[in-house]
Image 1 (cartoon, helix red, strand yellow):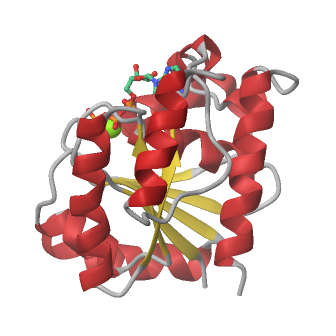
Image 2 (cartoon, helix red, strand yellow; image 1 turned 180 degrees about the vertical axis):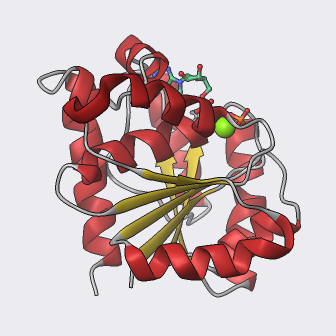
Length: 210
Ligand SMILES: Nc1ncnc2c1ncn2[C@@H]1O[C@H](COP(=O)(O)OP(=O)(O)OP(=O)(O)O)[C@@H](O)[C@H]1O
Ligand SMILES: [Mg+2]
């Protein structure tokens, strides 16, 4: 049975789709990975379509965008046939997103270092807690060595919010790889972005290891 990771955050543009795509692409080199896009914006679907242009040069990723009443059964099916399922959710918690949180082994909540992202993350954390799901914030687009980073980390610590130690910087390769249907570990395996992604993934695997 697959480990199910739902990427959720009510704040738009926090990095949900980018995170789901990159984690999935990195894991696909060694595991059976499926993507489930329940966001009507369908950004992950577009990314997956672009990925097809690389043919056999990239690892296969199963993709589904089933939603509504079929979602529960689809998730069961994907879970049976894969090692990991990543669910990308919309920037608002609707019925599908609630179901995706309920079905998750881990809820990942990308936050950019700004108060509105953290406030929005608290709402998603509460939803995960209501469903008794493990959840972690993942700091994204973090400027290195800045006062902003320090103040946000202090804020998160003061609020006792669960956060991953590994963080992702604000790096153009995340955007350029995404635009090519790739993850950073594929597009630029020796980049700082790829190293950050691998560190984040290692921490996630430690948490979800059964
Ligand atoms: N670490 C990063 N470095 C550089 N660009 C990034 C980074 N993370 C995300 N981005 C860019 O920020 C934009 C928003 O990211 P993304 O689409 O993943 O957010 P989202 O949370 O899925 O948004 P939505 O709520 O609309 O679904 C994208 O253009 C993406 O390429
Ligand atoms: Mg998105």
